[in-house]
Image (cartoon, one colour):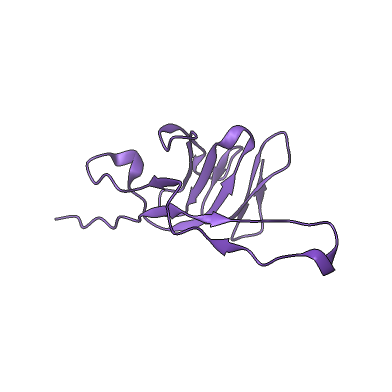
Length: 119
C-alpha cells in the first residue's frame, strides 16, 4: 500500500508596500481565504508531496514548486491547474532536488540542491 501525503494551501496574505521605510506598515493576514489550492483529495493535480516554494506570477497565476515530484505546478487565478513544468533529470528543464523558485519576467528558474540553476 502506498501512502500519500496531501498538502493544503490557503492564500490569505495581504501585503502593503510603501516607498519610504518610515511609512511602511506591517502586512496582515486576511481571515477570509482568497484562493484555496489542494483541498480536493480526488484531484491528483491538487495533491502535493513536499512544497518548497510558492510564487505569484503575472496575470494572477500561481506556481508551486513540489520537490517531491519534482515539478512546478501552475494554477490560474481561480485555483484551476493549468500545467506542470519540469521533471526529474539532469538536462534542460529537469531537476533532482529543487529548493527555490524564481521568476525574472521572462521565465521560471529553479535552484537545485546541488547548485544547478534551470531556467
